[in-house]
Amino acid sequence: MNKKYKDIEKKILVSLKEIGELQDNWDGYGSSSISKFEIEKAIQLTNLFLENDIVDKLWVGPSIDKGIHFELRFDDRDINVVLENDKIQVVLLSKWYITDTTKKTCCYLC
Image 1 (tube, rainbow, N blue to C red):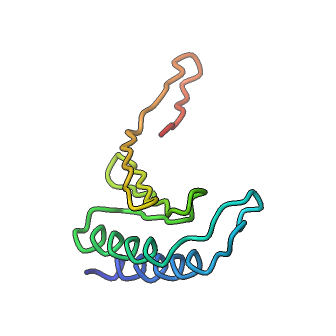
Image 2 (image 1 turned 60 degrees about the horizontal axis):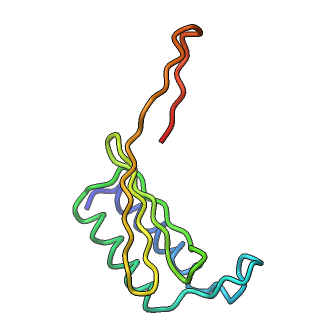
Image 3 (image 1 turned 120 degrees about the vertical axis):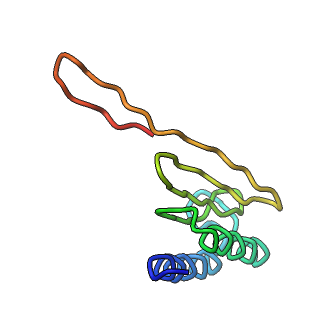
């Protein structure tokens, strides 16, 4: 694993530790804390992403239903992965552009 991925791994592991310490109602809207089991799965998933060098950027945070939300970016795609209640949801988002030819500007959307 190269230095870039080691740095990402360190940041993600710190984030996952902090997510694991969240208490019930961490968001002020009644969301439950994240289980140690979900944190362990998230660590395994992080290692899978990084060991296979498939991401340029990786972000992780809690989701509202006792889960963990990953956002991965590579090449021209984004992938959202949510681990919740022993399930994995994956959404692939392509980046695309809207061009306003009258103003010669481009809006970046993903």
